[in-house]
Length: 374
Image 1 (cartoon, rainbow, N blue to C red):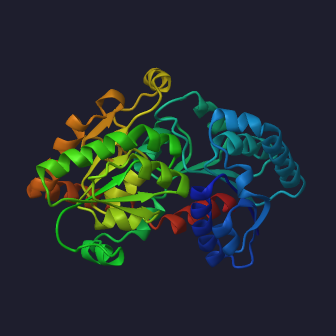
Image 2 (image 1 turned 30 degrees about the horizontal axis):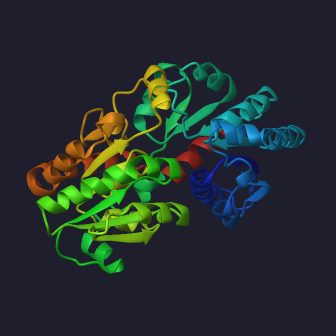
């Protein structure tokens, strides 16, 4: 059996590696090739191009690398058309993969797209192209599958690998000991984002909020996991002298597990915080022109994954001009001082965790193998 997979970034590499192990459990001698990163390579994958070829964010960066990306696209299309795999799986990277899937599907090669583009939020016109390009869509979240069912596009909800990897109950004290932190007292984690532009938008407000909280509750401690040295250096330069704060190189999972409450940027990390059952306050701020464009184009009731999954407001979220200390600090104090409210939230998070805990790698592999057998 020959299986083609193209992953576009590190998150896709993680999904791809789990999928490869699940496929090889059924077909140990399967040849699996395309584009992948270190985790996929460790699983026995052959990559025709480095993962970094496709790991390009932002319009300017994409334009700068356009010819390199197009050469990669055309080369893969030519290779797989000459040597057709039993199935092609595009993991995320929709602009690259859906175009490639369309070419291969026209040649009779079964195609799967793993991780739905956010068509349910904006650019719904992409549905027609997805329908022409994909024999099967694999989604991480149930509301995405519902959306594709409504539009008569073959879909399978497989769950989220993070929900399989993170236990239903995590040991907060063990996480604190691992980080060398005091096991007593209230701890707040600040997660201003993993991208530099996110961090510059939120850092000062997050630090001002921490300072305000400390004036109201002097026993509070703060922990901040920072994604890379550039972000860490920027963050350090913004910290007020009087604010006691513990900085980490990465280790966002451990920081969230150790915390009582998390103040965080909207993004995938909110899903991880939900699976860890930690109360959170979510914020997001962007350039004003980007925000006004987003208001015109994006049609979703919430910005954070816990609220989108629950289809109701479970955690407070603030965007743009509402990201101010006067809004953030009271919500954090409410989580710190209202144990009944926290228990209700954790019960809701546990239900959502069960919904996403589907043995995603195995379910995705089975859906793909069923498509091949047809």
